[in-house]
Amino acid sequence: MSTRDSTELVISNEPQFFFDNSLLEEAQNVTRTMHSPQKDPLNPLIKCDQAWEHVVDFNSSDYQVWKDTETSQFHCIYRDLNIDSEKLARVGGTIIDWNISRFRQLYARSDDGLTWEKPSMGLVTENGKDTNILLGSEEFGNAWGFAPIEDPLEPNPNRKFKAIFFHGPPGFAVADEQPGAQMRSASSPDGVHWIIDEDQPTFGSSGSRLGDVNFPFFNPETQTYLSNTRHPLLELAPRTREPNATVLGGSPGFDPVMDTPNRRAVRRIFQSESPDLRRWSTPRLILAPDPAFDNLDDGLYGMWPLRIGNEWLGFIQVFHMVSNTSDIQLAHSRDGKNWTRLAPGKPWLTNGTRGSWDEFQIFTPRVIPQGDEMWVYYGGASCHHDWWMVGRQEGLDVEEAYDSSKVQEGLGLARLRLNGFFSIGAHRVREGMFATQPLIATGDTLIINGDCGPNGYIKVEVTDVRNEALPGKSLDQCDPFTTDATSHVVTWNGDHKIPVPIPAATSTVSGYTSRPEHRRFRFIMRDAELYTFQITDSSATR
Image 1: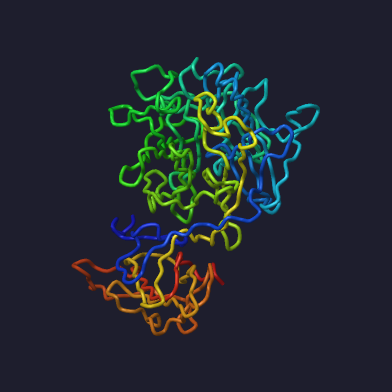
Image 2: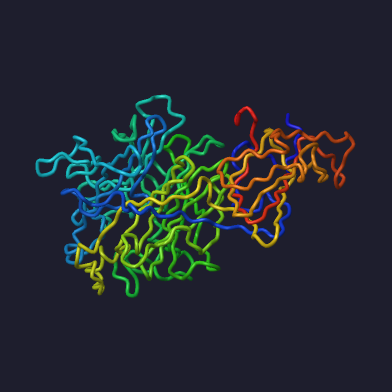
């Protein structure tokens, strides 16, 4: 049985971030900064360039990018979107009805993550040519929102990858059925070649139906699967009009009455949980727009989760309905279930400049560590969210509704310092300081990710719970860090090893006996930024 108190702060040997104040006990003359990635000049890396492609779509969960851990090859599955906007305006219905649209899943790969090819897959032929189409045909129907996940619990190598996706069979029409597409599942040995399961996954009381955004992920702490998604009835909350009736002053499917009970049709983030990727719980609400910093027309379109250290970072695609644009904001969680907005209302990844390929839309990114950088793959568009699709139907005065050359989407890349999402920093004028809470960590070596200005520095003092410096680890004995490194081992007179404090058995602080494991780290800095710190075993760094 553990003798530790439940109130003690125990950290792992993973990098520690400054997303919130949970690690901090005091701070003076320092500030927290959110850092945005820099877009690559080669963008867009993937765009519409094949005869069988119509609108290559990288919106929210309609694309996936990952790097194979064994082969180091990059993979991308994306949607090809073919909507007959003239027919939509003429006969009504919705953009996912079979008689109006075709949605297919296409594949691209890259050896370096920069130059991408679209290989022939031998699955779907058009006009006598083999294509890179993976899924979606006249026989199978529409497929979109294809969400693969590498399953760490799967013993069968032929089912190493799993996926859930949205399926509209031939003849499918939203108006004919309960709103929300049918969900299907599939398995694959490599994430590229898929076999569709016969049985459908279920989502509690929602049955085999779900909303049209889905991000499944594995939670190593609970050994279960979670998915950030939408409720299938999200945009059809109880109302007094017919579900497909024309709405004056709003777009079809959106309920403009927001301050009446049960009319909560604004886009929000829900979550389902599963023990096996087949049986999911009924989606529960985890994030909704906040009137304190979100505008009347803002919606949370979808959120992709990144496991980073022992925490989670969420990338929210925030949709601004009036301007019909979207950008990316951040959220944070320690358990994958309870989320808090970070720098709410402030975009982390913003739209491009006037006339650029990503001027109007930035779609939910996927983040891959690559050397000393985080590679941020994101979708972008020079067209608006739905004006080009429903503009004719609604009679909107916008060029993109009548000129297909104005409808362009693509996949871009932006680069960020490794783990460089947030930092604590000090100005060059005054020296700054912050100290951690007394914490327990099994390691004996401190590694920092930091950047110093021309005359900047970072120094560290390690103390016991009484703020008394450990032997050899005082501020004066610290070898200052003065450069720029994502992984620097802190030393004191050349020695990196941090001892464990051994107070007297009767030593108390505020009436409580102090434990030998408790250590506090005090960072002193000037003209410098500290992104993360990590306490690890010396055997792992030597």
